[in-house]
Image (cartoon, rainbow over all chains, first blue to last red):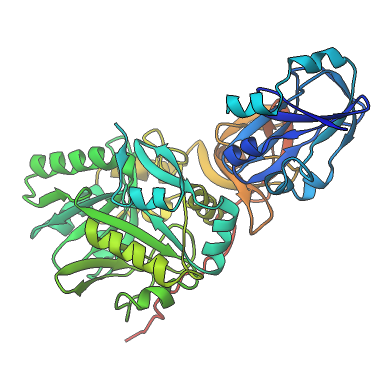
Length: 121
Length: 369
């Protein structure tokens, strides 16, 4: 059973078998407005918790994406290159951005659960 | 205290996202900029432009007076026409860019919201100093203004207002009962469309009626899509592309600088710039590499900085990224390849002339007599 956690910087991470799919929240996509470009990282890159791993550009603003935890990037959603609006349409599903191999599961305890995140926004 | 247009509560009712735009609470989007883009290019979009300034100038010498303020040639402007102009200070730098309407008994300057007070004061001072004795009235607060833009504009607005014999950059009074509508065929999108000025109450009624009677043909639109549409047309935005540190020659607005007979403020410096050239020019560019160009980003050629972006964004029509920038004149040539710095990396772009896309405005067919 996958577990969904949230960063205060509005990324979500779906955790299953030591891996995590990462995207931005429904609230974040709504705030950003129409997304027209996503700068994706390279597969194989190591990222640290809190490090910027990419950028989403909406009609209005550029917004950095921050890693909710440390890990190695094992997949990127390349469909976003031709259809960045997938994030607007389905932020928690088809709009996922990267997948990582989580290197330190302890860090996940610092993240928010769904009700804590909802309270924050 | 943020200002509200007469349509503010209508925007709230329509669930628009509201932002602070130069001190005005205005809708940035209703259902999303990209959807609103399709409305304007394929059907019609309704914009609240009440925040803009509407300054009325009348009196025997009103035309002569404006001729001294504006860089464009007011002598060419007949009753029922409008033109685009800048007004410069003594240094030839732009105080504002605006439209001048000529009606039978007056001229109207529709100026940028942020420059309303500045232009009003400028006009009053010049009027007093040169003893023109024209009447200058800022009617922005008592009048509202909306713009209907898109291919269906004529059809839907015809049901409300008489649009007979009105073509691009023409303006007329349409009186219904005791209400005076000042209607022009003009806009900031490159589409056929109209801009309407009337008292606040009548503007609210017209706004509501247009949306209610044409649910599948008229859609309210916000500032985000307005910016996208104007950028595709290469229209300058005051505060971004032009301001008091730039001249109309630098801004590639030579076409609205007419070295007409008689003096106008800034004329001598602009003649000098026209003859000797300027160091930088406002040009369009299109990204070759995929990256989003934004205001303030630096432009390089052979690792030397040659300019700065003043507007940038996504063009749905071109399905690519475009922008405008002041570029060192040596490199401000069409097809020049430039590098744009986005988050410490350089991305290739190509310099081009604006507009980026063709306009769909409907002009009067010239009748030679």
